Image (cartoon, rainbow, N blue to C red; front, side, top):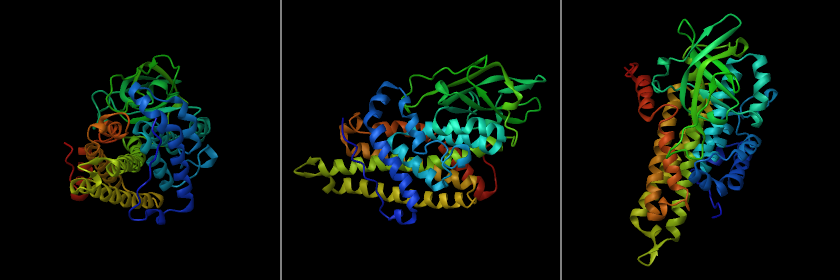
Amino acid sequence: MKPDLFQAPDYYLLDDLLTDEHKLVRDSARAWVKREVSPIIEDYAQRAEFPKQIIKGLGEIGGFGPYIPEEYGGAGLDQISYGLIMQEIERGDSGVRSTSSVQSSLVMYPIWKYGNEEQRIKYLPKLATGEMMGCFGLTEPDHGSNPGGMTTNFKDKGDHYVLNGAKMWISNAPFADIAVVWAKNEEGRIHGLIVERGMEGFTTPETHNKWSLRASSTGELIFDNVKIPKENLLPNKSGLGAPLGCLDSARYGIAWGAIGAAMDCYDTALRYAKERIQFDKPIAATQLQQKKLAEMITEITKAQLLTWRLGVLKNEGKATTAQISMAKRNNVDMAINIAREARQILGGMGITGEYSIMRHSMNLESVITYEGTHDIHLLITGADITGMQAFK
């Protein structure tokens, strides 16, 4: 087992823009990833299994809802701290970051923002520690980029609701204790419902044979006449804007997380290029490899600056959906390109599990698709700058 020698690149001295608290939060997460994730993640990815034993540690480093107020079990941190935690976790593995950001932005966030006080007190403290795990049900077999077309629905039966439908590509589904599910009422209005494991007619079959996010647990949510207590409806926001607000928070976390994956690929390639001798000299001394490495650090630095500024805007309540889309699309595209170039620098060794690059590359093929595809985010930016929708 190779030691984790990762050293984070900071070409423009961005640490000078961070507070002492930011750096403490980041360094704690980084140390935890080196100790608990890096030594085991290749083996779990090869076995296509999620390492459930790390859940408690994710809670301890603030990986679950770090911006949730302390009164509900969160750490009460700002948005840059949240981003830095996501960066460090995804530096370890995108699948582990998926577990963390789903719990934070897609389960805890809607309960905090759209739920009532009873729901916040009941669920958030246990979600913050990982004692309870959640998932988010929006994507359907026939409705991915067009979530408004969903067919999952619920009917009012007097003292309860009855929920029917199905969701797919759901991170955490196979082991989640609760699911925040988006469904249409009889008038066609979208609402959020908290569905609990054990409710009759609710099943979560696991998705197998993935070539990507292999160390993440993915599944479906099936609802067959599931009785939902009325107190499980999220009362404070409805319509498509409610789940999209959750996605804004998740996409923001991904923008930071993708930088972590890119950093790991760059750092691995740089170290390898300095050590690998061909034609009597390190390949780092050749022009073509220097070109690759120089372009990598340039793109990482640009992404760091973009995302730090977005974090400032998020803290100030000024970040728009379109700005978040730009960062998510740019940074994941940047990371997947760096993973491919880094793999080439390592040659044949780049495809082995001895190094992290091929795993990152496969994982990023999912990250570039989920929480809004690469193309959809381009159209969000296009609509924002032209004032004209091109989705239909």
